[in-house]
Length: 198
Image 1 (cartoon, rainbow, N blue to C red):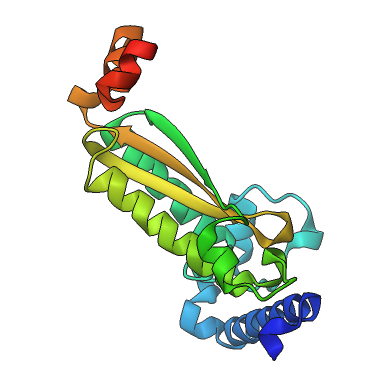
Image 2: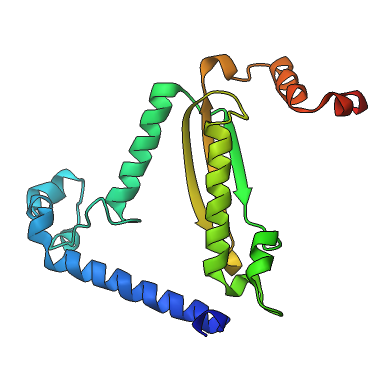
């Protein structure tokens, strides 16, 4: 019954997520000793970081790097990505995958008159399955060639539809360096009957 609630389901999901996040934040606030927050609380640390206003000095709550979306987590993700670029070079391909509310896998699970935006559980599961399939095509089936590194992020847009952005770094022998390489790659993927039409 809850899953058929439409917008009430969305509000329920948001409320439960907020409750979960508040519980996690309460835990971090009450367990600062475990996180070793005393290392970050000193006046010298504040001055060394470039702070010039005394109003900003005081007890701060430090979030660990495993708190998703926190400043330390975002910094860790950024540094990991930059390390890949430093090791393998600049990304060669930027691929975006968007969710389609009209996918048959989503339509099949909806009741009569129900909209995909009101069933985020179905949309998220189908999108995740297709995302895993795309990653398999890129990494194992090598549809773009040998991949040296792959980074992706999933974002949710209005009406609950997710999309993913991939940065793909190809191995040196598969990099596209000139228009001829691009043509060779594109026409190699198109069946011969369609090549003649082009």
